[in-house]
Length: 251
Image 1 (cartoon, rainbow, N blue to C red):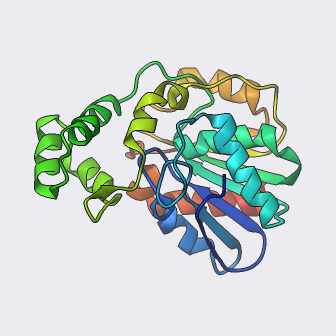
Image 2 (cartoon, rainbow, N blue to C red; image 1 turned 30 degrees about the vertical axis):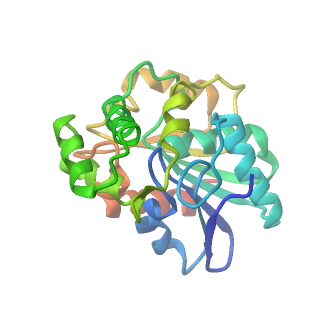
């Protein structure tokens, strides 16, 4: 699948990958800081943004999509930075195309299968809007508020609502959501990997550290206190500092 992407700058390539319901702009606060010294590639993963839609959505096919882009752009010594679902795509890509990857930066996700997700109420609200053909923004906001979705998440979702149309494929995400929560453990990967955890987020709990070190033995875990799952947006300066230090001093 040919993904939509935005390429800027020159130098060693860094690929930025967003989470579920997102788009290539979601990690812009990070990408714009690197563009003066690196070639930055921000991608819309399948079923998101302006990339093609598909009924199939699991980490193998999503990683293969990004591998196809890397091949088309003839990239090497690639740094991958992914948030949430995009982080798992990056981790899977270490198995699909390991020879071109130099480092992995994983933001608030772990290489585990998640049994539960707070996105359940979001999916129910989105499916309700889709099933009832609700395309008025005020009505959508009302449905989401009644579902108990907070204002910050509503504003985030509405970034992908353009011209009375959702840019992400609600039906495919809903139908394939068990695959998005899933993870198949991999053999130890020796690519240096930085995991950045939001201190208030449940996505990288202490009990997941064993799974991280078993699959990524050259990994380092950094905790950003006072931040939730969207740690890169809540504490952008701290995340950038961690990423820059890691890229400069760790090999």
